[in-house]
Image (cartoon, rainbow, N blue to C red):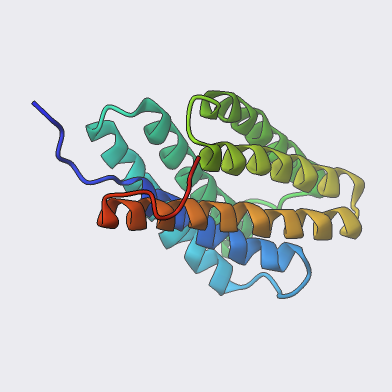
Length: 184
């Protein structure tokens, strides 16, 4: 029997993409880190991606399940890292602890990039650029370099925009039942 469940990937990609762009506008030095980023991190980057990941499991898509739930929980954990000290729960992160946190995500994302090589070019660009983003952000924390963080921010905006492109491309292509937006 054919699975007629809607494609949850655009929801996950738009949640990831918009939140990533917003955070990296901050990382590029354009805005401060405030509740705009944290609210997006909890609800759009976090919860929307976890929902998309759970829906991917209904489609028997291990890649989508793993990607969307993992990065959804990444956003939730990141907001917790920023917020818990303000609530009196634990100490704030050091640059070094954040560097190691980001390295762990770079390792995971590098593995997901390898898996993405079986997918379209748009997905490969997302995971390749995200791997680079995590590495740059970790380097910025380890070296305390604002220059590297700014470069990471610019690269992160590209990463987020590539996810938005893929999300909207999938929606538009499905609506028109033809490839209007090339995804490769």
